Length: 171
Image (tube, rainbow, N blue to C red; front, side, top):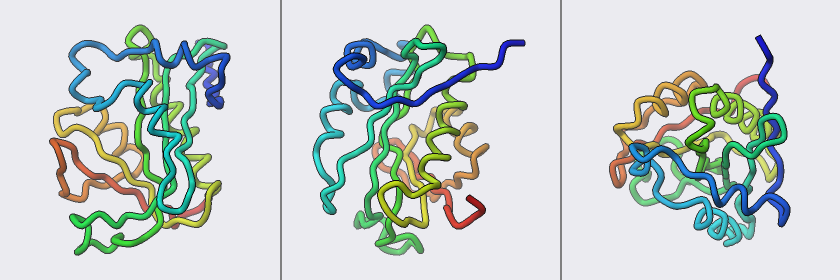
């Protein structure tokens, strides 16, 4: 069996059109709140600390198969006030998707694992957590994130569950 090679690469003028063209399957459109183009545009806005998001193209064998993005931010939303992570720095996974014709091949899991390995180096600064939201009816995402140690918080916003992973473990 051929080993899958996944690379995470910066989005540039050479690959932006390929990233923008990717779409998920029709039955998954409710799971993704924004298009890749909108997410990429949002990536260039700054968070409160002046740090932009990190948008990344997912490659498999030199072909763009997906897109992911995370940001270094503070977990300070008012709905988190009674949580132990309130006010803490975190890496927040803002967007992850695999294009329709590349799904079911393990690319998403491999890319997510590589992204977490990058986050574990704390590229933008110290943080205790990685956090993300996923649509409550997306059982595939729920299983994927749980397999990486993400725990549901019980906080639901716009039909999406907040899950969080503690980064205080072996790097």
